[in-house]
Amino acid sequence: LLEEAVGEFEGETDGGGVVAVQQHGHDHWEEAVKSWDQIVSQDDGSLNNNNNNLNEDTYRSLHGTKKPGFMVLGMHRSGTSMLSGLLVKGFGYETGGPLIGAAFDNEKGFYERIDVVLQNDEFFNAQHVGWSYNVYNYDGHKALQDKIQGRITFKEGTKALQFLNNPHKTLPYLQKDPRMCIALPTWLKLLDHPPAVVFTYRHPLEVAMSLKKREDNFTFEHGLRLWIVYNMRAIQNSVGLCRVFSTNDALVKDALGEVQRIADELTNTCNVIAPPITKLSSKVVEEFVDPSLQHNKKQREAKEQQLGILEDFGEGCVAREFESDYPEGSSNRKAEVDMYLMAMSVFCDLERGRAFEEDYEWPDLVNMKRAARIS
Image 1 (spheres, helix red, strand yellow):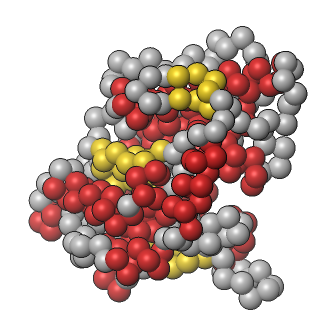
Image 2 (image 1 turned 120 degrees about the vertical axis):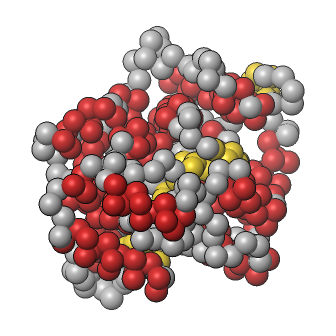
């Protein structure tokens, strides 16, 4: 899917007439890009300095001390695309583009800029990291040094920063890529202004089941471990930024109310530039959210209530039994259950708000007894 999108991004065709890229630019955004491109074309190298006085003066004359936008952080398969789509369609937050297009597993689109995704992959590849492996070991400072010292290319990142750091923009941006949970420390050093953050999470077993269904040779244990790492890094890496917290459950149960709350907090609490639309319409929600989501979730929850409890974490948060490919008593089954209980412990702490405390003790994935196949 990404290769198809890149082909469109670079002016190639896929031979089948399928458009794999979404362009979500608005007229005023295109005008702002033109203004910024003129500055870039005349640049003598000073644009690499995040303290550029001209850019700062231009931005402050337009927006004062307001934040230019926000990033949506969340693990893959956690509802970040639906949330981002509602914010873009419902309020007019801008992503720029081109974007990765819709796919069989995400028919409404991903709302991910191709250049950001490609640059994050470039950061990752230099450290033998991929979106689904070794992410625990990603070093944000090393990635920045790789850029500064020319050990990696920054062509795609430059394109992204022309949008994210454009002082002529008049509307707030929305940047979404699950990899940003991991790569955020690197990007924070490259942005002229710190963004706000919208963080969302989903039940770990639902995420693991979704990944297992989508990816070849993907185990529950693999997905659950990734769930822990992505959520841990998203929270750790965004400390000190203004954050708005949400959940996929809250979005599915009341999309209209939850997304309106998020937008209001971004404007009123995080001081992000106000979007052009201030009230989410039910029409946007009806067009964007599949009504079967809530029905299917209720059915699944009712079925789960009949399953046995593996562990009770208190305050109504329990880990229930689940179907496995491994036989009871096998070492693989035990490792899978151990990882699930570890993830559920974090999930319950997220639900209670404890995991957001700065002194929260995250699971020690490095010193686990079983050598994991992935990180």
